[in-house]
Image 1: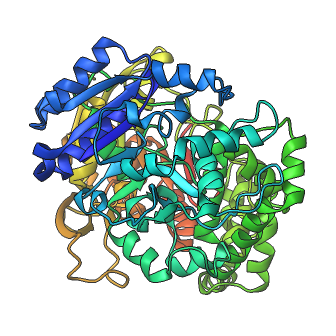
Image 2: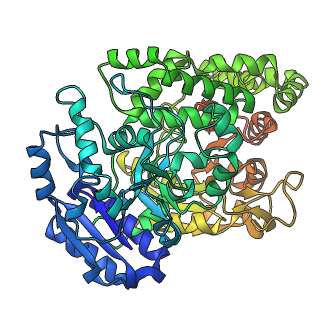
Image 3: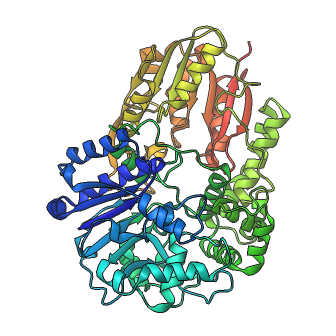
Length: 626
């Protein structure tokens, strides 16, 4: 196999990870594979590192060839081809392929791929007399500068028959097409090939599994075809479903719901795999890139809506959004909006155009209020039957803000209408106007997860001048514990218990492997034979020596807060520590946890703050000022 990558030095970390995925999944093809890397500026250290990585996987370094792109760039300049975004990099993939030194065929790959299986079947596909094979984009017909509409093909994976490439005079056809367009016209390789060759029947349709876009993984097949209004001209639903189950190549590009792994917000588990590939390379500390806040916003918005909006409503919304983004009126608005090119800007603009700005997201929930879900109905019944308790608790809360936040969150749980949702508060667990640090704090972190809350506490305690005496962390999930220990490594005065917290010391059924959502099993909702359910040790804090002088207890234990509080009853009554307890896991917790804490220490001042834009992260604060 002859494989070509075209990169500059800025893409080397991506290329390294892509090659690692290739070597990991194609060991059987090592002896017949040559890798060509066409570039103009890759540094010697980067070249050496790639060769070292090849050796790590047992791939012969002599089969990696660095090809200077200077010749092809000179040819393009002589042919009067305009640069695209200031350079010719995008054209390295399709021009001057006869200069590479490969024979027969060339598999041209982008450097942002995750290769999961054998590429030999792809390489050997019979393309008839087509010089190029590519995977179709989902149908967004190209119509550039008045040109006839054409099917677009994704440029991430191209299979080139070099004999037919010469015989069909592909390079001349591409140059002629460029010169037929307005002066200084330039576009990416993908659009150019699709327009110049697609209408002439010179592109072979490769199976979808060989270039499966990252964003495709977020859809159910039926939803994808409905939202994008696909009737024909694309792959069948069966082909989509089969490719989704086992994609050979995942193309890691930004989409509506998914973020590539070289961003801090990257989609798991691909992000972890990418990090693993680069963990012992020169790029391990520098490969992460900063993602535009607008992009983060649109991904968060759409993923949030996907979870909380009724399925049929969400599909209708997405269909409207996609349709609007393809329309001519949107393209004109896009042109007027400072001529932005980034897809993040395009999506946010489209969201505003269809009336769904992130600030006004709550208008969607009028549908829910008019057509309540079963969960909403249950919330209404529960809170209606406890109106007297609600009135009493409101009197116990220490300030008007707490009364407003708590009452609004109850109304929000009943209606899911965002006009009731209070403003999100910063500094979760450590709200500055509520929590005051004292010298020699003993902090108990129940539900330590990744340890970042404890680290936040330590930094705040040190900043306030008093420092801390001890931090005690309870985290029963083994996967979380591994991350936690890594994060707190090097900090003194930290005691870690691989246990849960409960009303007494015992073994409990625990749902593992759910990251921040791991927790004690509700047997009414979980199957007893679920492989993720394990018997796990839990303790009452009253039985733990390191907790006896606690001054501050934080709890986020996925619905077990009330039981954990009962297991700390003696400590709370004796020490009256500051408490920061999550009360959002159930409607019952919204009332019963406040009632229980008030019963234990009536002198506590009770505050409620909301720390997310959803129904979760509602926190009760209890502070004794005696």
